[in-house]
Amino acid sequence: MGKARRTRQTREQERRKARTRRTLIATGAAVVVVIALIAVQQLTSGGSSRPDPAKLSGVADVQAEFDGLTEKAGTVGPASAKVTIVEYGDLRCPICKQFDNDVIPRVISDFVRTGKAKLEYKTWPILGPNSVTAAQAAYAARRQNALWRYAALTYLNQGDENDTWFTTAIARSLAAGVGLNIAQFDKDRTSSAATAAISQVTAEATKLALPGTPSIRIAGPSGTTNVDATYDAIKAGVEKAGGTAG
Amino acid sequence: MSARRLAAVLALLELIVAAYLEIERARGRSVACPIGGGGCEAVQHSRYSKLAGVPLPLLGLAGAAAMFATTLLADPRARTVAFVLAVTGALFSLYLAGLQAFEIHAYCAWCLSSAVIWLALAATTGTAWLRAADEE
Image 1 (spheres, each protein chain N blue to C red):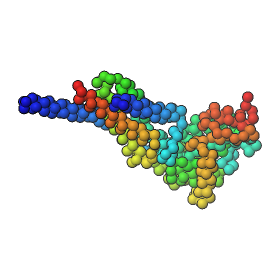
Image 2 (cartoon, rainbow over the protein chains, first blue to last red):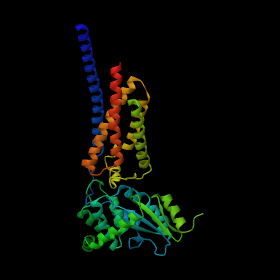
Image 3 (cartoon, chains in turn yellow, green):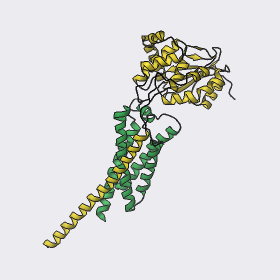
Image 4 (cartoon, rainbow over the protein chains, first blue to last red):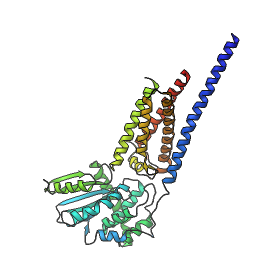
């Protein structure tokens, strides 16, 4: 009787031991895999990228992109154009950068330079306080009728969105890059009017329930519509707003 | 409901979350961010959103699919794989939650719910695995 109980106890103990060992092996395997995943991610995610105010890139590209176009009140293109394409953008947003690089040049050559539409930029800072700083600089550039060029140059030199890279040095360097009057730029950037203008766009975007940046709205004689931030959607939107579709 | 069936339901839920995140990423859109005040976009586009060039939602989708597949099999080896997979998913999700808190300083509700699902998966597959081991 006593022997049988002991055997049962021993068997139970062995089973428990085996169970602990198995759990440890399985969990250990998972831990090893996770450590490997983390190591690979840390190695491949790279260091933080910050633009260098002394080494801006794309100054000539921006000049060429907007060559011959005049800007007024944040809008480039002929004032007589019936259709207005409005972009709500954040200078620190990576998708806006992508949109500015891939779609805007085609929009400018196909619709703005042909007189079909004019293009307006509204700075809607959605990525935290550093985006507000960038929006204040954008307001100051708008005051000197260079918002589009300032935005384009900023996108070309954009830093990592997790970094507070939009510093005063960068703001001024970008302003110099598009040929702004720096003293005036600094005055406008820090003015209460800049804050008021940003609040106004934010309120407008909230009222329109825009999903994020970049958001595109196209207004014309046939009404106003929100379209996706792609070339094809903008093309269709311009035709529809101008009353020239199908 | 058996632990294995519960794990299958959780894996399916995770599959849906990962699929949504991956579809929106592939279409170049930002996910809807009902909670957290726009944090999803910051997380989605942070430099931590990829692993060796592979977008994390895609990795999550593959993990959830593998997880779901293993929960469908009654085989003891599948149970072991399911447990290891779930613990891996749970630990890696916790690491990603840590990145949101300490590196990105923004939270993505989708990513956090995914972490909760992976933790639940680790618990249920662990239960199923140990129970099966005891019965052997």
